[in-house]
Length: 298
View 1 (tube, rainbow, N blue to C red):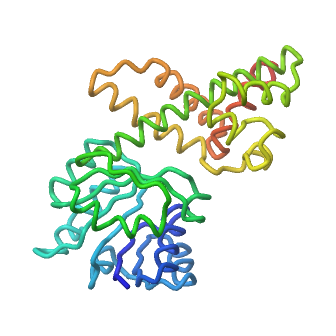
View 2 (view 1 turned 45 degrees about the vertical axis):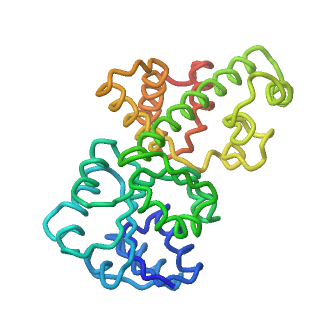
């Protein structure tokens, strides 16, 4: 059994911490939201009163936070983890999805730190089937691997500090672009009076096959487990897709990469958010586009 600290017990961090508890570890958690602390305690975890409280006896500390500014504050701020840990820090692992620059800056202050954003959504966090994309030293990756294995099934060391974040935003740019492409195809099929099930049957076995079609189909019916069959209740909210696409475009601008489709996908999800649909699953882009095709919205 290891002693683990976990900061950020929300929709993703809470289930991840619970899986570490289930694996037999002593997990001390902290969150600003009382409900997150209560859920962690109910799952068998211990609760800290402050950010630095998770450090007591911890061999490894995980963070799962909303944005880069929160990561900087928790690690680098007054009373943050690095200052509080002193000369004998635990291994720090940040699982937040943030900008590459922040990941590298924080890792530069916390020697041996890993950036390890995840893919798989709330369902994957709960089931312990997440994908971890990890950046940082090989030695740190080896130390952390058993803990990743308690929370995920696909664990990849992507490279040096920041490589995990780079992999995450590149992957989700692919996902955002492909989902819009699949959604547009079904919008066109609807206008051409082509049965959705027939398009799915054909494309799933042809060159149009992709994860956004066969695992997460944005129209009700063909894939029973997809959010389209639950009124687009979010597995991965449109607001989170917009966040990741924005991070990808910031990185593209900074590095001079040409990503015109990524930029277009960001604008589509920005428009969805502005129309009030940011809380829906990102696959709701089909319904959002279809409504516009029918002229039902401005």
